[in-house]
Amino acid sequence: MLQNIAIYPNERDVFYREELDNCYSAETFILSYTVIEVPFEIASALVFGALAAYADNLKRTVTMFLVSAFNCFCVISCGESLGIMFCTLFSHVGFAVNVTSTLLSLACTLAGVMSLNVNKVLEGFNYLSPVKYCVANMAHYSLQGQHFDCSATERLADGNCPITTGEQVLKLYNLDKNGPMNIMALGVCTIIYRIVAYAFLKAMRSHRMMELWREWRLSRKSRSQQSR
Image (cartoon, rainbow, N blue to C red):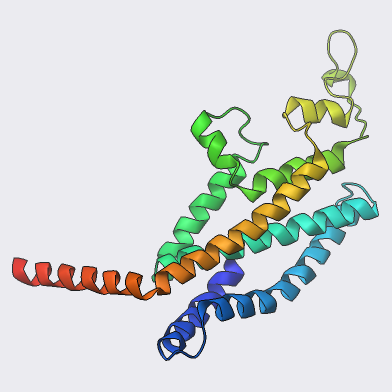
C-alpha cells in the first residue's frame, strides 16, 4: 500500500489529463503500471522468502522459501490493487490511506490467528481477504512435522506438554486445511483484486460516470450558493 501511495496518485493525475486528450486508454495505463510494478514486487518477495525460510527458520527448505516468496508477492500485489481502488475512488490521498489501512487491519485481525470465532458476516467478509489464505497456507507448510517441548512447570497434570506437534497447533487454530488449495486461492484472489482495480478505474473514467460526477458537483455548488 505504501508503495502505491507514493507513486500511483501522481501517475493517476497524469493519466487523467492524457486520457482526456485520447492519448491512451485505461487498459493501457493499468497494464503498463502493472508491468513496471511486478519486477519490484518479485524482488521484495524473494528477499522476504529468504528471510522467512532461512533467517527466521520457519523451515530451511526450498519449498518454504518459494511458498513464503509467493505469499509475499500476492499480499503486496493485493495491497497495490486496494491502493488503486481507493485512490481512484477518492481524490484525497489521506482519506484513501485511512480507508485502506482500516480494511487491512480488519483483514489481519480476522486472518485466523488473533480472532478464532467470528460471526457469519465477518466470516463471509474474510473469504474476500488474501491474508486469510496467506495465513492458512503458511501455517500448513511451516508447522507440518514440527515437534515441541516444554519445561517442567508448563507440563499438565499427567506429565505431558499441552502442545507437542505442529499438527496440534493447526487443529487448535482451525488451520488444518489444504495448504496447496489455499495457495491456489491466494493466487486467484490476487488476479481478481487487480481486475477489480481495473474495473474501478474504467468505471470512474467512463464518460457517463464523469457526466454524473460533474452534474452532482454542480448541483451541490448550486445548493450551497442558494443557502447563502
